[in-house]
Image 1 (cartoon, rainbow, N blue to C red):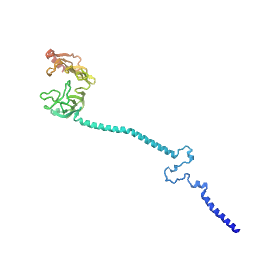
Image 2: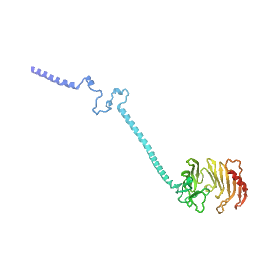
Image 3: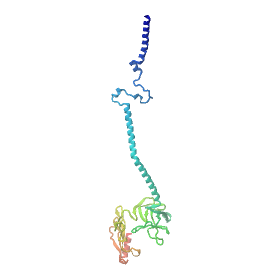
Image 4: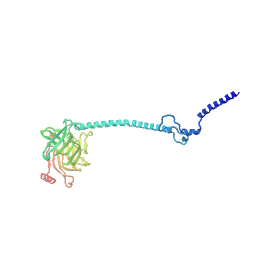
Amino acid sequence: MIANKFKLIIFNLVISVTIVPIGWAQTTPSSLTTAAKPVLESSGAPSSPFAPFSSVPSSMTTLGLPTMSSLKEKKDAYVNDLKDQKDAYLSGIMPDLGLKVKQLKKLKADRKSKNKQSKTEYEGLSMVKAYTKFGSGDRTIVEEFHVLRDNDAAKPLAYIRDIYRYYQKSGRVTNSIVRDEGAGLLLHGPYKRYQNGDLIEEGYYYAGMKDGRWEKYDSHFMLLDKSRWHQGVPAESKLTFYDSTHHKIKEIIPMEYGKIKGTYMAFHENGLLAEEGKYDNGIKVGRWTEYYPINPGGRRMRRKLTQYASDQWDTEFESYTITEWDEKGKVTYERAKEKVVQEEETEN
């Protein structure tokens, strides 16, 4: 009996010893958990700058503050939006950029080709460079000019009076017909004239006719005069024609800066010169000549010669007829030569 009681006591002691430690290991007082552990428990992943904010207590979300996951979503959305905008912008401008690059390359090539052609061509016609020199000392004149490679490649207009040619035998550039030297070579392209090494005149010719911008300078390269021409006539001139195709010239009214100034020419319907003279600010000056519409032997037949004042300021001068001819070239009227000579001396 005593032995049985003793066994019971020992059994109870074993049970109490084994149960109590187990209960202590599984349950820990709340006071110890708050003191020994952090509020936010580490997940065991590698540490990062955003680790402290990997989770937010529910008490903070109730305050309306964004969570880390929502911020990351907004950031990703913003980056994607920027990328889409960039792609759209590049896709929009790249075709234009490529086109502009092609255009720039073409312009550069055209400019290079034009610069190359400008040394051998003018207005699409081939030319050859030449020089001439005359005079001595301070009056030495050097002309740098070009002539048509093919002298028949273009012809001057029939109604242009001043046609410039280079005569090889005499080495002269002139608008006069030089006898015994053939037709001469038509000037075509850039022209420069130097005196004692100083540039005093420059311009362009087209098939012997003045063309483009012309300028004159003094010895200090100061501009003295400038003008613009178009194939032998001032660029501002007014031209009228008998026909709608503009092949039969009727009249050339010279214009400079909006004023009638320079050589005036009128033509008969057959193309022969009818009248010629000069205007000074809309006023007839100097001698004017009228012609018949016939040309026997290639010679113009004069009809009338009239004298006007020497300039626009001589308002008291009264014009008069000097000479008149019939169609056969016979004089029908002539003013007294003594009076004409006397008046010419007075004008000079």
